[in-house]
Image 1: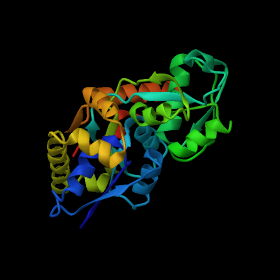
Image 2: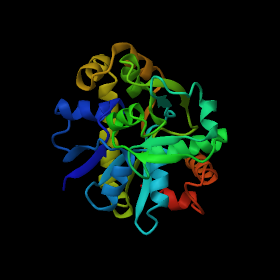
Image 3: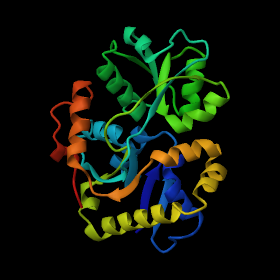
Length: 278
């Protein structure tokens, strides 16, 4: 049976895309499914049975589990252990000049309800004591850029390296970075699959091998050519990113839960409700 693995077609997925593009795992019966709308969409598709595994932004996944308590959705592994830098972007002539200016109230563009872009806006509002934000659903990063350009939203949050090309083109303006203290990406599936030890361990071994192969000499060239990033942007990203097909650090997931509960994203959710180790 083919294992359908959802991921966003951006640089963090490059190890898996590289493995597939180079035919390294043709015998592994793994299908990589590109999901441009991100974590909220992948959570929905795992719950609906359209995906078997999803590689999700950690805070968005935890929020998704909290919003789908009647399902068997769980977090079972880590994919990127380093924190994810979320860039806050506004239109070029925006009145906002710093993150502090958002304290008085702003409408944030989000890709979809329950997405990482929404969860992080709520987290940032809580951490920086901003006025409770409003939201406008605008789709993928291109929709978010258009949304702030046309004043449908005041700002939005998206991964920093992805946004650099848009800053260089002066499509939007960089305002600041929000960096939460937990792993950037985690692995999600339904409990019955996670309990299938042979399939899940085999999948984790596949991911680890893909990471090792990707970190060779061609990694910068591949990301630039396959995904359209600038060489300096890729080099900067590789300086901080730490891939890991490893176990879940429950202490870090507890930090996510406490931060999201403070932000009003989840309520009465324990680590044991979120994590299921293979």
